[in-house]
Length: 458
Image (cartoon, rainbow, N blue to C red; front, side):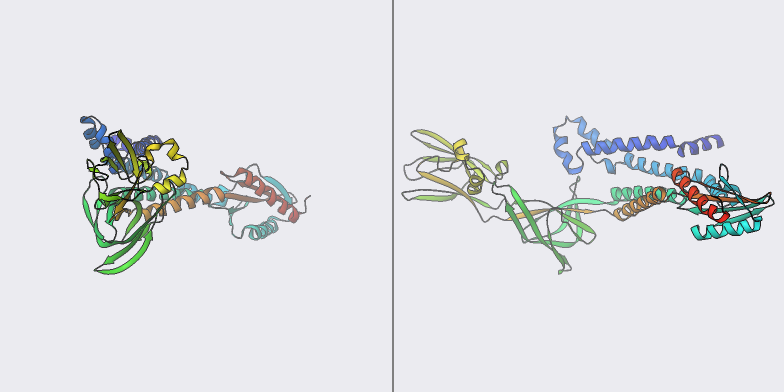
């Protein structure tokens, strides 16, 4: 049992396991990017053969980031990172203690040796003076063979790397918290009305917000070709019947209230808006009526008959349109009538010549136009709350800070050894850095140059 326990712990603390887990999580994230998630997966599921949607739902492929197996992968990676660090902690602690001992850790091998004409005590005083001037703090250890000095510059990797590991753990924790306890949904609010609950994405369940959201006004502007240019919701947030906050919500400019973040997602026209068809001719006469698909009516007494074939709320992004067929003794004339025909023609000057079917004067001498009566917009708000965001932000800051400390301020150990020599003393100076050997060499040359001035060598 003990061997099995040790084997399990060794596996848990294995870097190979970390690599395997990272590959699996990466593949899962790619699947979550390629496969539509949540509410967006419904059209895909509807096109699949009957057994596949249930299988994908059971495997969590339509909600990967909340799937139990994905959460298990993240937890296992967190355990692996923790086990790896705990396994290496004793060795790192021994190294920390060793690096703090001048007699054991100072890089005296392959150092530059200088001759000092005075006795070792005077040489030690001179070395202490230059170390204090250059580095401020240093450590000294004495032995029968001489004195050892150790100064350090930069930040020890024993500080930077643990901060990075801690940041990764906190970042993963934030992702788990957001994935498991976070919520995302939608709210549809007609202009002038309020909403008290949100529809959860993916499930369609209703969840109370805990306050009221009122759409005071919805504003939409169009490009000349009829495509939406800007849409904005003016919202008020009410608590216990009193207005607590208000603001304007635009695309990429969210609002926050009550722990939720609101995004402008879309808009639409309420079905109650009446579609009105108007017709007239130069000599006078004409009419207006509400229309529906299948309607048939005469333009005038004993005149041609109009049939409503199709009604589109937004035909090719050009706005509401209706397809008519005007029949008389000479045959049948089809034509499309747009609400935004003036803007469409201004953006496409040659459109009537290219597509006569969109000409409202196709059936002469009559002119057709389309309008909406009593229309009212509704706004679509995306609502989300992610309690893991503060943790994820803290983890990111720690990772960035640890990497900056680890790579921009590399640790350098500067060692000096003073020994008695014939006619004076010998001073050996060297510097060492695992992550910045070039900087250590430069540090050693600069230190030796300063020592030469003291000992009088050229």
